[in-house]
Figure 1: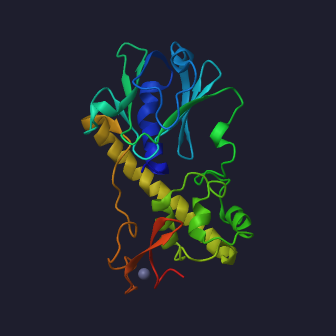
Figure 2: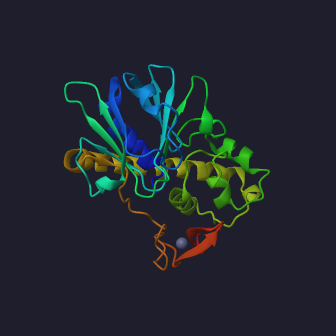
Length: 275
Ligand SMILES: [Zn+2]
C-alpha cells in the first residue's frame, strides 16, 4: 500500500508534467473507483489549469484555476502512469486518463486494480476529508512536545495512536513499525506512559524514517521516470517490517523480530530492545 513517502514521490513525479497545464481532455473508463466520481467531473476539469500539486498526509492535492481542488488518493493499489510507459500495470485497470495541455500533450493514467483509490472535487474553502487531519509529520507543527500533548490522555497502545490520523497525519503501518523500532519503544506501550524524552525521540525517528524513504523514492523516481514512467510503488529496505524471525538489526541486541496482531494489523518489533 502506498504510504506517505510513496505519495510524496508520486507528487514529485507528477508535478513537472501537470503543474501550470490545463486538462486538455479527461476520460473516465468507469463511473466509480472506491466512490463514484463527482458530478460533472469531466466538465469541471476540462480546460481548467492545475496550478499547484501538493501532498497532505496521503492525499494528492491539486489546486485548480476554477477555485476547486482535485483530491486524489491511491488507496491500496493505485498508481499513475506518465506518458503511457508501464511498469506492468494491466490496461484493464486504467480508470482515468488525463491528457494535459502543451506541445507534448502528456498522458497521465490512473491505474488501480483493487479500486480503493478515489478522486474528489472540493469547492473553495472545503477541506473535505482533510478537515480532521493532525499535523504533517515532516512539518514543524509535529514535534516531541506536540506528540506528548496528543498522547497524554490516550490509553491505546502507541502503535494504534500513531495510526490515528488526528494524532499525526499520513503515517501507515510500515513506517510506524520502523519508527518505533528506531526509538526503542514497544508497539504495545500505552500511549500515556511515554515520557517527554521518549516523545522527542519518537517524533525525531518518525521524521528521519520518512525522510530516508522519500530520498530512496527520489532515486527510484529517476529510474521510473526514465525506464517505466510508472509512479506509485517501490520497495524500500525495512529494518523490522516484514522481517519476522530475523535477527534484530541492533548490533548489541541478540533479539529476534516478532510479529503480533494489533487492531487486525501486523506489528513487527524486537521485544528485547523495544520496551
Ligand atoms: Zn533488538
